[in-house]
Length: 133
Image (tube, rainbow, N blue to C red; front, side, top):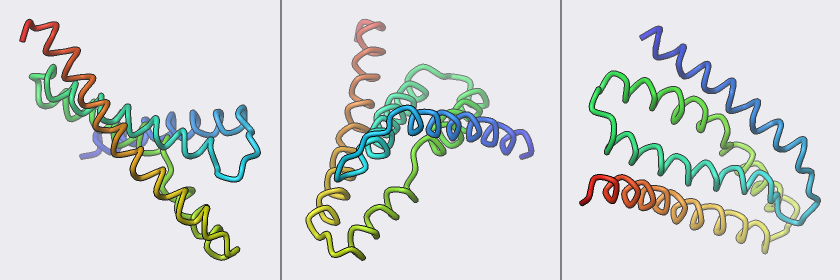
């Protein structure tokens, strides 16, 4: 149990540092928080790839779980940020900016699902073609 927590913690530290670095470098002043949205969408895509890759390629269940905890739960879990997404949406609502309050979550959720599916599809395509299936 302690090893699992350690894997999550180490992955989370890296994910948060990566997100903070990106948000510090890419300061883009737009009406929608495009950097956070892009980070969240990239995270959806990468989690789709990771999940399907582990399913198709990892036979060792212990290693599979360790990689899932480190990369999926830790790194990608802290790289993406639901709280910033929720807060930005709440700010749009409290400032009576209804178009952004509706558009931002609509884009984030629909594109997030599409990108997660795309990551699953891509990993499936890559690993089933390599195996000649």
